Image 1 (tube, rainbow, N blue to C red):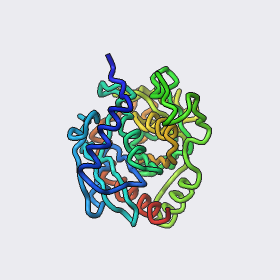
Image 2 (cartoon, rainbow, N blue to C red):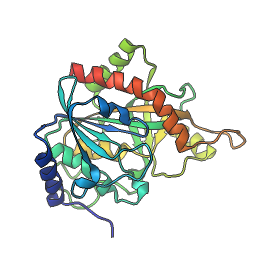
Image 3 (cartoon, rainbow, N blue to C red):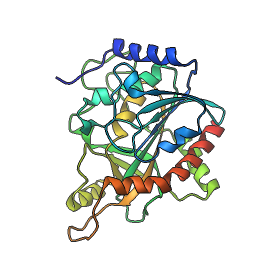
Length: 280
């Protein structure tokens, strides 16, 4: 039976983190595939392995270090998730999103979500950034929604408004930060799938018809839970590759390609996020 966390599970995780550090983070950052280097910039860091936090899901995917790093970055008290877990790893979607609940109970008010995504929009190039202005949560629409089950009104309402999932003011800061740094950034819609398979060419064409600009295997459920907890959300995708829409193409999608693109995206993502933090 899938593990469905309770308030007691969240509180036990919070207690363990507070025992390890006195940092009281107001901003949390989740780092996607190949983007973990930003955590190394945190000053006076306290790093806790996910496996040492009660009930935290532990990632098994290369490129996800699996640590929570707390400290200071650009004058802000931060909690940085150096990697994340995914639904395809076998966890329940409620377990996957447990860290977001825990971060909110630690006092986090702003959540910055990053990911490596396939570019659906034909104008995108590898290593470009995309500001997420909205998403299509196909996993949740198919019934795997992290809010399924009993609702805890202390977190949020039974029926959650998602018309403003991504904070416009945070988006403006990120857009201006990218412009100031001369970093290519687009605005677009992120499509969240379950994975772990990459999409077929027919699926890529279908997702474009839906209005998607980038596609990945994370983020949407985290955004749902963050908004349920009342957090402001900024989402940024790093375009790891241009999606393959032709079955006769000689190209192949791979996780190694995602990690290689991360080496190019990380300096760009780091520069934008640091500027956003400095202007909060």
